[in-house]
Image (cartoon, rainbow, N blue to C red; front, side):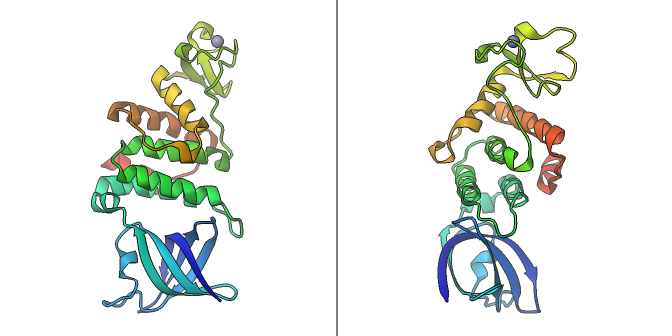
Length: 247
Ligand SMILES: [Zn+2]
């Protein structure tokens, strides 16, 4: 049976001197393994897949198990993402955040939408650290993590202008009024603006985010906050996160 799906190549491995097995994540959130014959040849019919992250239309034959890739037509080339090493590293971080949480035989349509949205935002020159934060916040529940930035865990206030700390014993924000010797234990000061942005990204549906315009400095602080949450609750290691630290 012949299929045609929008998708993004998320993995590849050499099969023989000339062929490669690739895995695509399709628009309905399914992982499809495909044999790409001639992939490694100089005149490869799939040359577009060798040049970075792309959203493409994949045409393939498949009965059961592995399919055979016939054709690839690029839909979004993500030129800026693929052309700038630093932006590309942030994009790799986005890809890791999403693909590491994928499970076999489980369609995650949301993951695909989040991937395309995040790559498009990176392409549109928003602050890269802000986009990674957005992806990480949306993915957090799939790693069993939580981030409560809506109400102070002690007094319950929802007045965001009062939030001043994030507590790892209360698993929540605390407001400036409730910080004392006891609550300050395992609580870290986090700027009000960062907590606001984190809440905004958590609650705004993926499709409603058209641009993320925040300063580079706030984007960096936001990512540091989100990474602290990941360290506390997930313990997942991301290669591109480590790489970014060295750039
Ligand atoms: Zn309070």
